[in-house]
Image (cartoon, rainbow, N blue to C red; front, side, top):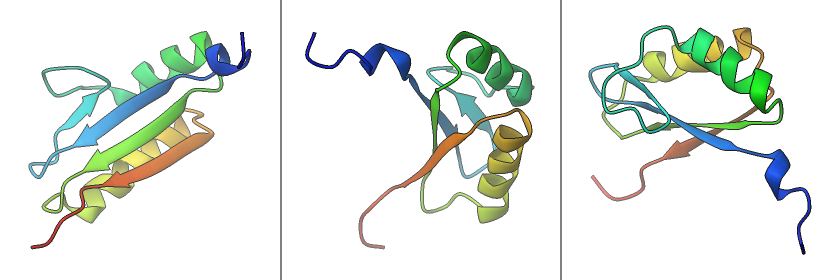
Length: 87
C-alpha cells in the first residue's frame, strides 16, 4: 500500500443547519446527544477528524456550541468547512 496510514484516520462530518439542528455523519434526522456519538467514534478510531459544516444562514453560536461539544467529548482534530458563493 502506498499510504499505510490512511486507515488510521476517519473523517466525520457534523452538519449544523440554519435551524440549529445537528446531523452527525450521514444521519438523515437531527442527532441528539452528539457528545456520546463522538466518544463512541473516538473509542473506535482515536484519530478521527471531525469536520463541522454549516451554510451561510447557520447561526455562529450554533457552530460554536457544536465545537465546544466536540472538544468536551475529547475530539482533538476538528476543522470548519464553509459554503462558498456570493450572497
